[in-house]
Length: 316
Image (cartoon, rainbow, N blue to C red; front, top):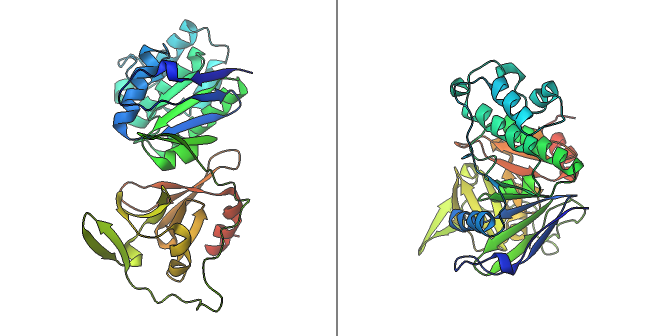
């Protein structure tokens, strides 16, 4: 079994807190942090750990076709996986003959994935691998992670988006100034306790949802909310990528919003069902919900909730 360890001796930075983390080759670890801490983490790994980080800065040949790029690096790294299988694995067969400079950003990202996958380095570290790409590219990266586990390569993913950490990581962590803390990943085994007192009415008499912005209190109509997520034990309203803090936990707000068509799709998320555009199946019982908003947000869906939510949309 292969291991990848980050210890206090590697961290020589005033910005990063001291922490230790060991990643086995049987799972992917994801660390969620703000972009400043992430950049410092990348610097530490590159300078002190001598570990290459996937960051889209390694060169590809823009005038060569997708297939020519992959063929070159396939020989360079001595990759044993057949070239046609590589093209299919990363869903690049349809643009194989297209020069790279004419490809979409998501297609180029998948070519970067191919290059790093064929390099065979261990461990593998990715910085923001699925930021700003389409669903096909996200799906290929999820499949790639599975392949890397099959090849016994420890993987660390650095992200600034909690949804990405929960989607990509078998183990997820949050890195802040106070240290590295594990994020509980919902496996659907534990039921969320009912916070309603005995005899409480089943219909909520709630028309506005209060949230704080600086020293002001803003009232939101439930239909305008995309979803609500838990951050450090507090609920955050999310509307078109803008977050607003609530003086409530998810458990406290869940029952009040149920009558307005909100659903607890994950331990850390309540989604507005009216905003759901798509239910996505990734791999190995991993699911997400795509929200119909400006950024087409994807949020995690617990594997044991998939049947329930399909019934709500009369899909089964």
